[in-house]
Image 1 (cartoon, helix red, strand yellow):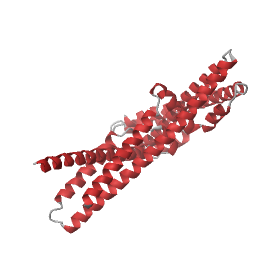
Image 2: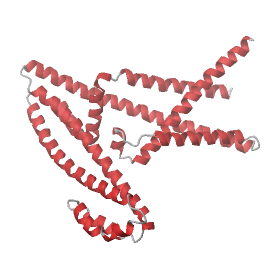
Image 3: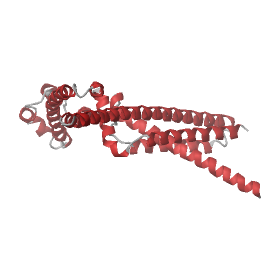
Length: 315
């Protein structure tokens, strides 16, 4: 009886998950997918911009547009400097990765000259020079390269996040500017209302998506906890036949590992907003992948079991 209750609960949870997915998909306008993503990127970086455009009127729109045009021009200048620092660090990292045991000493001997040219416009020249000078031999180089590589990855991710924001913000401001230049007052008011409704709809969709993700995480954690609990209980009660359980746990670990490997290293808008690292984001990907696999297997097992039981009962 308890097994039947568990199956019913799992099936009900699966149906709930599917309903949530359908609600989100039907409320999502595929034609405005790019605009949806842009709004999420702006909301993660500068939510005040969205608020200002939502509160704008045809009369106040010119001032709002001019304010953010000036603001984004400054962001663009700042981003160019970040790109320069990123490119310098990338070149330095290539230098380090190309070092071998036979050319390490020569590079170290020529490093002062190389550093003058490479770090001429670098904000962290002294830090990089002192860092490499602290590498006394080739064996110590690996740990230093790892440190520089991590710094470059963080700088690159920050640059990509800011670049995506700038692109999205420029797109929104450009749309508002086109509305602002509309000659007809009625059309200008109607187009502004359409833009504001789009922003409102995109933000509502994002909230629904976040709720869906949170429920998915919760169900995934519950599934994993239940799996481990029943597995450990089975092992304790009958250790001799527990090899099957151990195989299942090994498969579970393999699925998690595969999910981590295939997980994207590019942070999503939500991940960027949450301040996640690439490693933690890949762990989330692994959790989602594992949850989806077990959800599909659970639903299929329920369906197959129901069909087999129906066949047996007919006989």
